[in-house]
Amino acid sequence: MASDMLVQDVEGAQGERTHLSPEERRAQGKAARARVPREAHAELNPAAGRDPVGLLIEQEQARVPELVPIRHGRMLVSPFTFYRGAARIMAADLATTRSPGLRTQLCGDAHLANFGAYASPERRLVFDVNDFDETLPGPFEWDVKRLTTSFVVAGRNNGFSTKQCRKLALAAVGSYRRTMRTFADQTILDVWYAHLNVEDRLEEFKLSLSRKELKRDAADLLAAENGVAKAHTRTSLQAVAKLTTVTGGRRQIVSDAPLIVPVDELTDMDTAEVLHTIRGLLASYRATLRSDRRVLFDHFTLTDVAHKVVGVGSIGLRAWVLLFESGLGAETLVLQAKQAEASVLAAYAGASEHASHAERVVAGQHLMQASSDIFLGWLAANPAEGWTDDYYLRQLRDWKASADLEKMNLRSFDVYARLCGWTLARAHARSGDRIVLAGYLGRSGAFDHAVADFAEAYADLNERDHAALAEAVATGRVQADSDV
Image 1 (cartoon, rainbow, N blue to C red):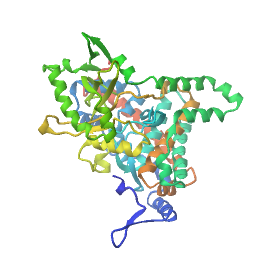
Image 2 (image 1 turned 120 degrees about the vertical axis):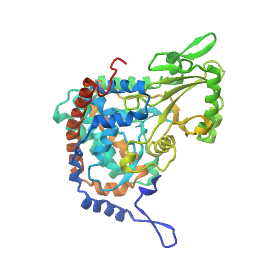
Image 3 (image 1 turned 45 degrees about the vertical axis):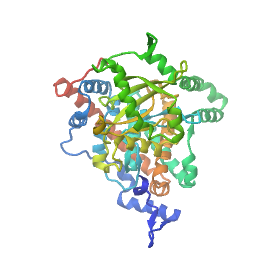
C-alpha cells in the first residue's frame, strides 16, 4: 500500500532497494516548494458549475432510499453537521487545488469529530483517528485542510469570533507541522510506536499547570477526568444492557425503528434460518482476523442481528449490530458490521489497490492507527455465496469516547486542536515520507497561515452549500426527515 508514497526509496541496477539520506530527502521536500509554494495552499478555486447538492444525490444512489432523508435532515441542523456529511463535496473541491505531490495514506474525512478515544489491545485509553470509510493514498494536504477547516466550522457553530476561529485553525495545522518535524528527527520505529495515551497526557498536562492555572481550569479538568471514567464503562456489557432485553429466556436486540430494527422485523424468513446464514458468512470475516483472535472469536456464537443507523455522512449505508454470546452468564460481544463503498477520494486520487472496499478500510486503519480494535476485520462481497456488499467489522463499543464539542470552551478547543494535529501527523508519518514532508513544511508558519486562509474561505463556502441543501429541500429536489 505504501510503496507509491515512500519517495526515499529508489531501485538499484540489480533491482535492490537503496535509501536516500535524510539530507537528500529534506532537499526533495524543499524542492517541492518550487512546484507548489506553501503560500499557494491558501487558494480555493471551486470548479465552474459546481453543484454540491448534485454531488450528494450522486453519492446516495446506492444507499438505502428510505434512510437518505434522515441523512439530509441531520445535515440540515447546522453548517457543522452539513460539513460532517460533505466529504464527497470537499473531495471534489480539493481536487481543484494545486498539490506538491507528496502522498500519504489519507483518512479521507479527517474532520475533528472523527477523532476520539478507545481501548487499545493493552487496555489503555488511547486517542486517535477513528473513522476510515474514505481512507486512500493521496496528497497529504487534503487531510490537513479538511481537519483545519473543521475547526473553523465548529468554532463558528460554538459562537467563537473570527479571530478565535483562526486561532483554532492555526493550532491544528501548526501542531501538525511541528509534530511532523519532530518525527523527521526520529527513527521510523519510534514513529511506529508513538501513541497518545489519554490518561498519561491528562496527568502530564495537570503537572504542567501552576496552582493558579489548576484553580482556573478545575472545572475543565474535572470534566476531562469524568470523561475518562465514563469511557471505561462503555463496554460490550454496557451496549448489551442498553440495546437488548431478555424475553422468554432469549436475549434480543430491542427495536427502535427506524434507527434500530431487529432482523426478524426486516424479513419474512425464520430468524433462526437468517442467523444460520449469517454465521456462515462470518467464516469469511473470521479468516481476516489474526490467528490468536480467531481462537478468542470462537468462544462466541451469534444470537441476534439488527440494522442500525449511524453517524451523519454514513446514513444510508447498511450497518448492522451483531450480538454474540458465549453461553456463560452475561459474557457477550457486540460487533458492528458497516457497509463499505468506494472512497470519495477515488475519483480524484486514484482507485484503491484492494478489490474489496472493506479490506481498503481495514488496511488503511491498521496503517494510520497506532492501535486498532482486536476484532477489526472484513467481509468481501461474493454474489455467488449470496451477498453483494463489502462490510468491515469492529466492536460497537470498547471504551469509545468523543469530545462534547458543543460544550467545549475556547481553551479546551485549542488543546483539542493540537491533539488532533499531532495525531494526524503521526498517522501520516507512518505511511508517507516524514522527512520529505518536514522539508516541505519548514520551520516558518507559511504553510500554517496559508491553510488557515483556506479554512476560512472554505467555511464560507460550506455555509453557502448548507443553504443550498436547505433550498433543495424547500423546492422538493431532495427530501429531508428532521425528526429522527
